[in-house]
Image (tube, rainbow, N blue to C red; front, side, top):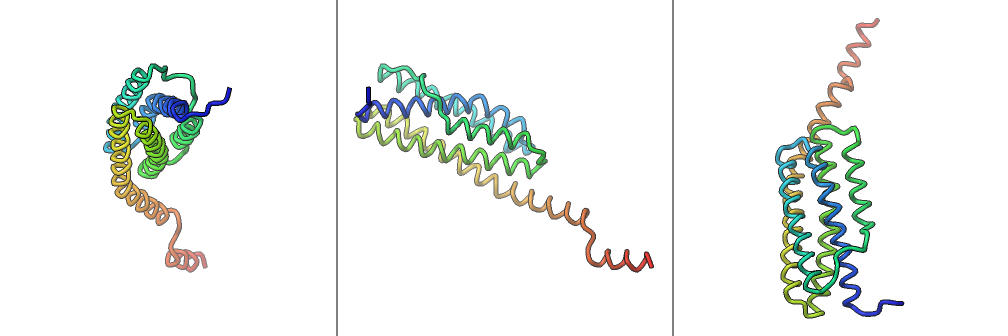
Length: 186
């Protein structure tokens, strides 16, 4: 039977983001463990606690709607988590790995910002004022997390770039040292 009303779509989207949050609750400890920056590790750990609260808020909304939160798999988050896992498993090290972890985390945040913005708007149109308030709070927290990741990335990306420059200098002889080596082999 076709679904043809906004409330059904709203509940369907809530189930999707609820599953996304549950997937993140499992993935964030691995991201924290893989981070080399203490500040990044701490940020992932803090966001894990926040994510658990986001899931609780969604459960409250489902309860008020008389609905169950289960029944949908968020394929988008599944893909984003898989990309984050690939970053963890890649051979990148130090600040370069941290830069990759931030990249993966920001993709997640941008997805969540879009999803929460959408369901908040649906709740508003449907007159679900308590849900609007809860969803707006979560949306603002997701935006704040994205901003924190951007701030962290400024320093970490610079460190990763300088690490790369130092490594290139030790691996590649300069033109001066190449000329010197050529002269000494004569």
